Image (tube, rainbow, N blue to C red; front, side):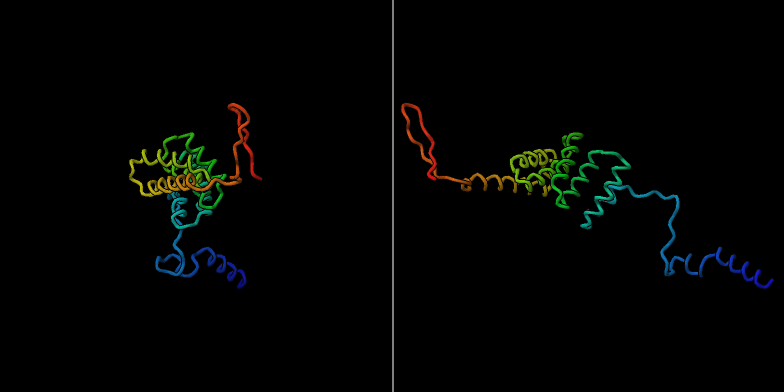
Length: 185
């Protein structure tokens, strides 16, 4: 009988809170989860992770946002931005182009696609995107203005640099109005 009483006391003790501090707010344990509250959407979490420099975690949160909201221009642009920060330029370009197919005047996607194209060595198209983003944004964003300035500088630097490859060519006249291009190699 004594064993049964002890077993019953242990069973009842297991049903109650462990110690008195688990339910206190100033106790050593984390507060309980408020059931029934709303979860923060994936895009908001992703934006916070990007701001904190946690790009891989941001990508995961944006994927959750894509599952919740579908492939909206906001979601596609956010996914493209995270991939850009992770150095995945091909994926970033595809996602940002898809965002612009859905909303051609979406300024963040225009700007970020321009950054991808600069990184991929396509400053001409990047400049066009930055100019569009700058016009749509009415020149308010310093980042877009700076990106446009860099794209223009990059294009100017390329146009004034020496052409690559073999520059030793000569024209030889071969009759009236006919010329032959010769290489000095």
